[in-house]
Image (cartoon, helix red, strand yellow):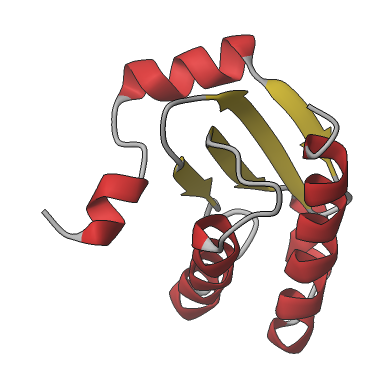
Length: 114
């Protein structure tokens, strides 16, 4: 099993539990849902209706994966869902990285108050 596979949430039950019990943080472009856990794991969702081109969806997921796996200060373990919101469809590829960076800064600020 690769390191990436260990960090992703694959179980439908885990994802449903996070959706039902988790805390939420929303940006105009991204939605974060998380719960405290024993280890860091994440799932990234971006539908074809929001980002039409597969290369752009993969780029979006790749950027989010970097933030999700980055060391956090203070260190805490979360299971989290990261979802693209419809407003992301209006952002061109050149600005996706900046939009994601801003959303993650908001999330880090809000989740540090756990």
